[in-house]
Image (cartoon, rainbow, N blue to C red; front, side, top):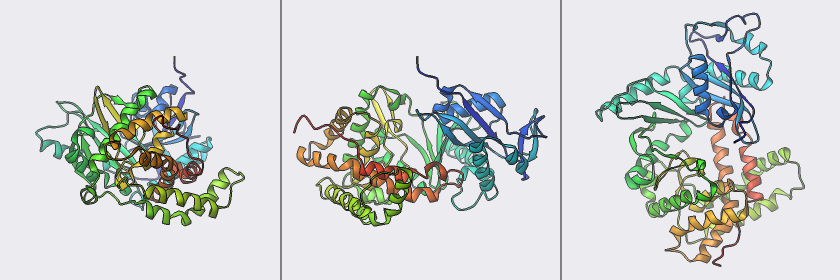
Length: 445
């Protein structure tokens, strides 16, 4: 029996449409408190489970986003603030109270900080970096777009779409139709190109990515359900299926850079990454503050990382499609079908940088070797084993530096509510570059 973990306590923010007030539990006006829902520990494993629990407990349907303000050692949310669409009429059992009074009465410091961020961002919903789903009327506008695109295919929704997943960079809506569900993914503006990248991948390699029904970079992607389950839910020894599929995708898209560029995929070559090392000294300073240690001088460390990057760049393996955040939770399996989804970070670079994220999900060098061997299979028909193994040796460190660059660009582009959730991402990835994961030697070398 799995450990259920600590309960998940969820505070729910419903702003008043006319402004200045938020929904509180009736009878708490003297000491106004946000509605609170306490869920079993398992609910904290996925935002969708938290949303389902809040809906069933409160009847609130327009849930939009979540700030996971506390997590346990297994990355399950134990304390969260969920934000819902603004309303004007208080449901039975609830009342409106001044937002400032609720903020002052909130005893939990993490919840108070999250509430303060949300209230400040809500005061300027169209401000720089604002996530589109927090702009009033977003769900209705998106539902209308979904309805129009489905009508063009002779389908219609049988109920209003609802959010089933939310994170700092995207939300996913699910809508029912007479022939089964459809899903809509909306991303922050920084990742608007995901829609057109996915559309291109759907044309070129349709069996290996989600089926795309409609796209609009200003709105998002409408997709058919994939079926099956996430690879992360299977035993780790079976995860090689995901890496093999990724390599097959990358091999298939090698030499097709113009198509990827036309779809909006950014070019993120390794020489440009090496040129950014000097500017990462501030990230190193943040790492030293987070983890005081006997770190060597940054100039020496940057020189070593630069050599790694240029070594991988010098390999014969060409630039091609890169996923950018490839891990077992971004692979869907259904029988023999294996599809890779969540292309927010899709780009053009050295393909082996994708190993860095995936390999950190495996605890031992031997298990990482099993995965690497599967990844190398599609490449082995065209490249010598020694060439591939040298690229594998460089990839964990270089891929981690690639992630540092990703977060340096991403965090300032996030909604102000959510930037804090990734504020330590760049320095922690730099640590991974300086102390990369080990991969056991190949039995074939």
